[in-house]
Image 1: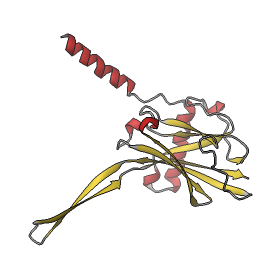
Image 2: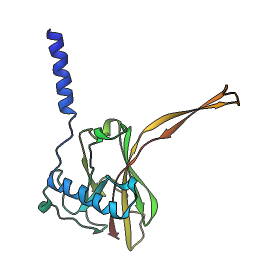
Image 3: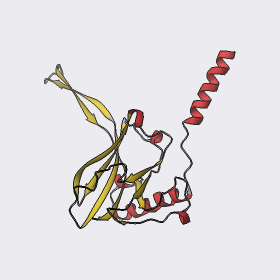
Image 4: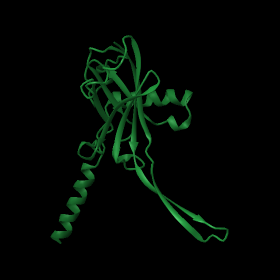
Amino acid sequence: MKKLFFALAILISAKAFAQPQPQGEFHKYIVKKTDDERRKTKSQEWWNKGVIVFSTNEIKRTATTAEVKLQTSFTAEQTIYGRAFLPKSIGQLERKPESIITRFIVDGKPYKAEIIYKDDMMLDEAWSSFMYILPEDMPSLFDDLETGEHIVKMEVWSSVPTEKTTVYTDENDKALAVAKEEINRGQFLAAGEFKIVK
């Protein structure tokens, strides 16, 4: 009986810790606002995705709408605080990610920089928002940019490596060969952009 009670207690506590973190007022507002905007202008694969917003002040996870002062334009000398707000927590995604990747696109071209969360640095499954501090998180991020204005887009993707098996058959459906390849079944999670003046 004690073993059953102990096992039940572990199961209940594991479920409790796996619960998503509460979402603050601004979090709910910005995800819904972005989704409403995308439904008017984007195809369905963009719906129900997250958004990354930016400020020169830290954006708290549970901030109210009045507390958040957003910016879309910065100088290269400023510290930029960004926060990704997702509709669901990492643990609620359709496919459990091996890693979360943040890619940078500068002036419409993929940039050399990526932030990868995996293994010991993986984001907690309960999180549906997480913060960036630029350039602290990527110290050389703006070093190669030419003087002038640049549009920096950040995209968050999940990485879900999956093994795909293909069986080649003859006209009688007899197996001739089997090929295995690793594909990535990750998905787009969030995006945001800002202007940087160097």
